[in-house]
Image: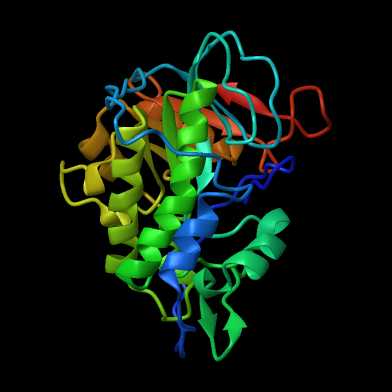
Length: 291
């Protein structure tokens, strides 16, 4: 999702699992060298620089999700999420959206040309998300995860340079769309690398969906907060709040479920109603309410 100039939201997808096949080989050295010098890798911090402390987002404040395009920060929004290609919001805590586990459709030609070995394949065919025009990234080995973390790490550093204070990684649950080629452990290992990279850049790291990773009150993989879609529908909201307290930013797309969420948690948690296309304010179909 959210390639340069065409940010777009991903919707909540339930688990899918099918038989898998072989995966192509990898030349890690070539991956790491090219990742450091190509467009999607925005740049890295000097190894000699001091790691800044991450500032956590405030809890139980107004939230806005602006992945369909940036617009003025709403008066009630203390936290605003925008795509990594956008500018950080002025006057609000900015969360930077990064697709850490699947490709952007607008960048697929770059991936195929420069890093085809990092695209998950079954019998020579790319594994595509069944609901979005995205290819799943291959996080099945430590070498591939290291190479991908170098590329995505450049985007993370770019978010920090722009003034964002947090970052969330979409498609953490991509193993459920991998046709059996990836495991939850693969995604967890990749998630740990991305969280560590975010923290080194001075950014708080946000979990996106994937409630099944949460066990009790323990925050999985070192995440600091959560951005969750439609937890009211899937009766998962309590799992997030037990782990993250009031640093949970809930997004609902159905008005009846939004009202139920407000009644249940609106006094203690950020709950947002948005249109499913996340269009800009002023465009047809725009919906935004909070409680």
